[in-house]
Image 1 (spheres, one colour):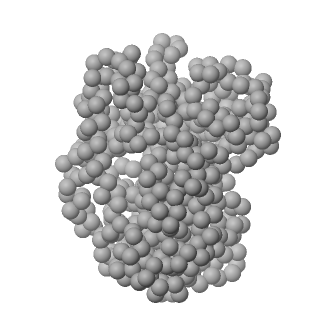
Image 2 (tube, rainbow, N blue to C red):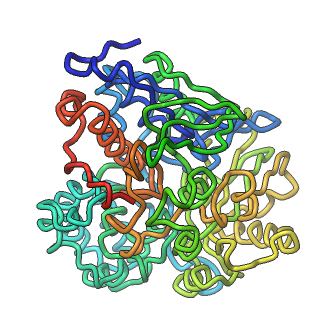
Image 3 (cartoon, helix red, strand yellow):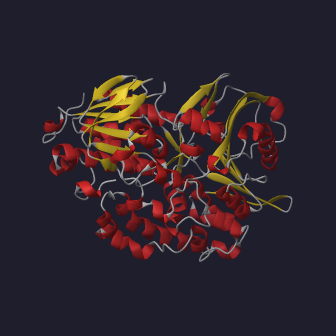
Length: 529
């Protein structure tokens, strides 16, 4: 086990239970172990990673289940560095160029394409093919969002467990750049008149399960992050990152228990003091929950222990959309034009998004295709192709009868792939798995099948989002808590939760010695979630 630094030895007698070995749980376990705390991770699955895992299917095909790329690796690299390791010694990250192939539907076929790249001169040239005047504003957009990220990054790094955090120096400094009354699309109209160009910088709001026509303008920084800092493919799939984190955690003394189903959190008065796992009680000084918030909070924490998130509030919370997934193992190859990431953007994109938001199943949907073999030959056997197809659809609150529509929607998705040149794949399918919204809920514990967690509208962000410190001795990590969804943001949330937990157990000085970012003081008992 790696030795704790001087000043952290007082933590070595403490025990923390982490529920869930997703990216947030694993990152938190690493940081707590680095501080000298004995950490036990309980994961009900037989594999770490949660939805960020890579599975091998019959026939030798490999698929990422959820996230299919890695963005802004600096945060995770910093976590590895704090543990005395280099991320690049554990995982090979290939920067993709182009990072996406955007295909715009129109006029009964394809109305335009953009090979999205972080090379600004080439990106301008790509955009100029569609809208020459818009291309002139690309660098201005980048400059503006570079400044916006500079001011908002400190906000994402601080906890919001006190309402006064909404008036923190970082928050006040960022306010002039946030324009909360604008949507992402409205903000982009200041730079780009062609709706297709705006989509090239706004479709990323789907990572939050939101519409660019409703998503707060802050989130133009999502596309900026991709173009400025790169989109990466971890060789072996995104699960390689989770496996690397788990491997390092074990070497640091973390006890990772697979096939361990946590039934509930236990309490001593108001303080969390352990978990019940497969009928046995495991005592701990603190508990960290990593999972889909709306699902696991209700399942593991009694309602009286979550006064700000009663069952009724969770039921009324606005959720992200869901996804209809096809994982296809195909004999033979696919057209060379199919990039690592290809996105078909519907001719009536705004209508498509409105349907999803309002609970109507789109019949002319946009879709996303990952062809990982474009970069990584290990994702399928020689002479075969593994395709990941994602179609955004409404979550289960829409009441869609998926068992009856599943087969016809599969056919619709395959027909839509023909616009990308995939005309003959159905007869060559040798492996197929479908995950519809009902299975996201039943098989992956995703509340209402909302694959991107709670939505990221203003009334569910910052202090209004579930807090990292959920109560005495009880902490949250994952996309459903602050700062929000997306792997880099989840890793940042793990840093916030770990530091708050360390402060609670050993005081602020120990947290500083652990090399973690500063946080605001702990909330008073009446101020926590």
